[in-house]
Structure formats: C-alpha cells, structure tokens
Image 1 (cartoon, rainbow, N blue to C red):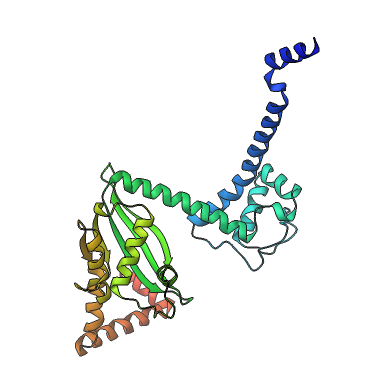
Image 2: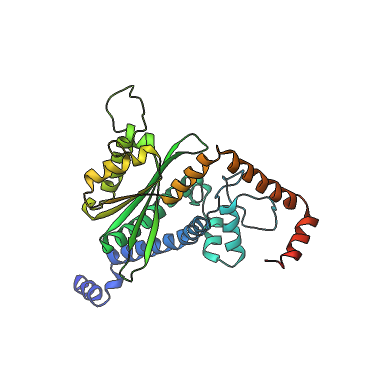
Length: 298
C-alpha cells in the first residue's frame, strides 16, 4: 500500500522526485554561476572594444568592493568591476563578497582564459560571415614589435549579401614560434623568406578551415619579400590559391618613392623649408593664434 501511494505521488508530482530535485538544484547552480560570470565577461568585452589595458601595478588579491575606502588605481579591469558594483550590480557584489579569493574569477590567469574564449567566439563569428559570403581576400604583413617578437598580422576582406565591404582583423601570430615549432630539425636558422612567409599564411588559412579556391585577392606591402615573382610571399600563396589576384599596396609604393626621392637636393630643401614653417607656428601659441585668425579658423 505504501509503495503504491509513493508511486502515485511521484507520478502526479514529478518535481518532488529525488532525481528531479537534484537536477533542478544543479540547474539552479549552473544558472547562478553564469550570472556571476556575466558582469566579469561584460567588463572584459568593454575593455577589449575600447582598446584599454586591463591591469595596473597590482592585479591580485581580494577586491575591496567599497569604492570610497581605497582611492588607489588597481587597473582598468578591477576599477570597472568596482564601478559596476557602485552602479547597483548586486549579483557581482554578492559574488565578490561571499566567495573565497581563489574563486572570484578575476585573477590575471582567469582574465587570459576569458579573453581567449572571447577571441574564439569573435573569430568564429567572423569566419562564419566570410564563409557565408563565399569569396574573400587576405591581407597580411610581418614586423618586429617592441618586445622583439616577429608579429604576423592577418586580416580578411569580404563582401556581404548587402554588398557592404568588410575588412576584419583576424589576429597576430608569433611568426617564428608558429613556423619553426613545427619543424623537427634542430639548429635551423629562422630565415624570413617569402616562401616561408607565404606557406605560413596558407597554413593559417587552412587552420581556419577556409576554402583556398575561394580566395580571390592577396594584399601586402611593396617590399621584395612580398612582391618577388619567383620567391615572394604573394606568389607562394597564389600556388595554393589559383583564383587569387595579387595586389601590392599603392600607399606603400608611394611611401617608398617619397623616401627614395629625399636623396634629391631640391626635394630635401623643400622638406626642410616646410619643417621650419611648421616649427615656427607650432612652437608659439601666439603665432598659432594669429595664424588661425588670418585663416579664419579654417
């Protein structure tokens, strides 16, 4: 009799069954955890869109949610979290006040993991748009940054269904790490040749699952490593992308022409006169004010 009654109760009220109660509690925990992470991810996306640095001089330890007690600058990310709390974000405030220091999800390691997740999501969205438009062009360049790392920048250009042209930055690649980590031989000189650079770009395109036959354009600067017909990066990519038309940058060619023309005495004198005129007005606020009045502030 009791077994029958219990079965009838569970059948009529399935929400009271132990398995369902455990499942409901788990779903509530998942929902609560997602709500805790949401304001943190919003701060990361905001700083990324505004191109602002995340960290200050100190970026560890428990966050003091009282914005008035410590006037010190803890970095844009932590200060933005404080601002959200001061603006009335009770979920974030409760999360930071009730969790231990190791479970706040605001450490620099967690920041990097969340940034990586945002990067993957953004890249996936861009690649879906590129594949939807079918045809695309690739724009790339390589340069050494201030930290002595060879950065390979890559962008994709495509036209959507509304005939709007988009140029989307895909990201930076550490050129030497990407190319030479795949080699099995030791003591290989890391040469930056057009063939190696072109193969690296093709390899990146394959990693992104892009159809090489749909690549219809290649854009680079005008240096010999890029433009060489036999060993240039553009020519190497064209071997794998038969429909791609190579278009070196016209602005870069103009820049090279201007830099070479500086060897001409007449051009050098002209540039010197222009620099002196600019310096004459820029070094004095009075002269600049008189100039603006004479030009009617144009």
